[in-house]
Length: 400
Image (tube, rainbow, N blue to C red; front, side):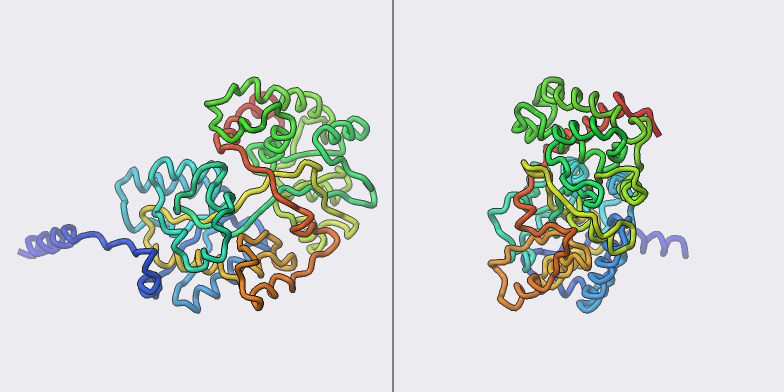
């Protein structure tokens, strides 16, 4: 009898319709649904500055009735694989990830496999403070976001050098090669598929390609061998001139900074324009380090957050995403003393009091101002990164 009752109750519960997703266009209802929710934000956890900012966002979310838990990742692909596994197992609700810091090839993969909730991003109240004509906020590595992810920060490749040792750094890939011939062993880049190492390859490809416009299309639509031939000719010449003659590579950006600190190399780079200033403040680099760009510009892109299709706390995730777009959060994030990531807001759309928050940020001598950074170069289609990483590994990647 007891088993019959339990079976009946279980069948009834299974027959209940799934809870409806929150309507992004009804913001009061979103706020109401978010009350008491815990949002598990899967985001890269390899920076004290980033982790500290996310902690602060958590305090703002708590004030709106949402608990934010930062799940620290070393590789966003880990989270993508988890969502894909949940979908393969038929878990269409109650997923373990509510919000995900994502862009590039990971976004393209999730969008292609229908792993994302949306559209929702353009309905956020604070989205109105961005420029609707800014293509960087509507496309992710040339892939249309279609409201599936919300922008929250702008990053750009910046090189840095110790001005006490190198007064006039090379400002193009060709100039870097010429400098390396005169200074062998004094330059390095992280080993792909590390993100910074792959970024260096893309920057070189853009500068060296005969027709970089081809990079906006999927790699399968291009004559890959012809487009990349100048890059591999360049890498053949550069590799023996690298630190340790290209027989070993730094593992990541942190190791690159350490090599700079130990005076083993003279030029470093990062995707955070404030990286040099952060390293100086942390005592990792001397205060004679300065940042520089290449004359034709450097790669840049937006960081986004996305909500998986089966997220448990979709409403709470939208609340967090809207907090990230608030003038207070954007000004704090853009302050070099906090992080130094570029804002996605259109400052002309802000109230005077909100604009003043951005003016309060101080840019030290190691950090380039937004005006000095200028407009970034567009990222190639995400398919290029994966192919370049595989090709580089096959050609040069035996070193560890």
